[in-house]
Image (cartoon, rainbow, N blue to C red; front, side, top):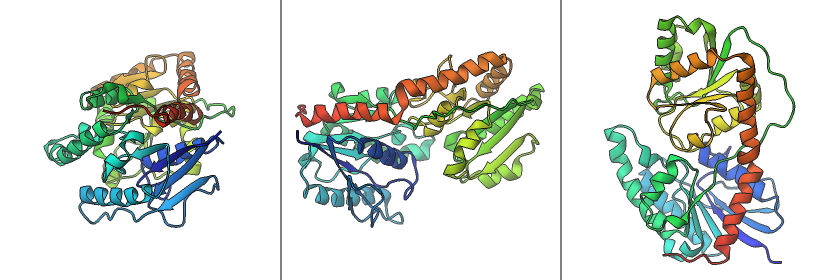
Length: 373
């Protein structure tokens, strides 16, 4: 039986490039490479190769020049990707973001686009919304050209369905995580240990978090918690200097090897983000048996419900403070059950093995010649 030839087009592979899309590229490709029926080629901007796996073929092209106009650079990069694609035979082309744009008509019948978090459609503030306009125009064009468009689920599917003429080309394929399978015992704390792990940036809701701290302090409830905040970003130094709470520890950058230890010190994970795709940090927290409090944005409602945590309104410090107070008042058995529900949800739906299987089903559908408009 002939192998199915899959070409991945991405503008970066983790850890050579950082970001949710770049990490998604690496982990999905590595999982799919375990299938002997797939022939995988990856087009990326890293000379010398990234994958230490002879099964994965790699084609390096010149990357995006960050100092130039980003949108124009995306198009120029896609032109280099198109030139590489024209030298290959394939059954499916899987494009991350804007990587397949130039000469898209040559590839559209076999093209899957994964736009991930749809950031241009979730822009906040007048300036960012204006910047997002050309990106939305281009994405709308590409979506309607492609044979399939991937949604991570939740509100992202609604965004896509309002932009795509042929709704049947939208496929819900979630993000994934490597599950934690080893047995570990959670430490019992005198106070509730609350974890935050994200960039210290406005869009991740770091200001919402600190406003919620003030609200809990005003209520006299902050003393029941210890907060551990991981990550860096443009607002890191500001909040490190402004932090006036003894029970709020700002840890800074956390290397990959220390991430499991970080999650296992906590009782609950919070992410008061303003917009998202399907955040990897929430998946990681869940597989480490943590209940989650997260804003109802992007595809977070696919991950968190009343069984394993709380969905809160975005941009609401009051909601975050209320959810933390509710969690504090739960008995220890209920908290443990919520953590187990998080881990069970990961095992049922969001392991990379399960996500890869869903991708393979789509690949076989596209490879058999699904018609386009």
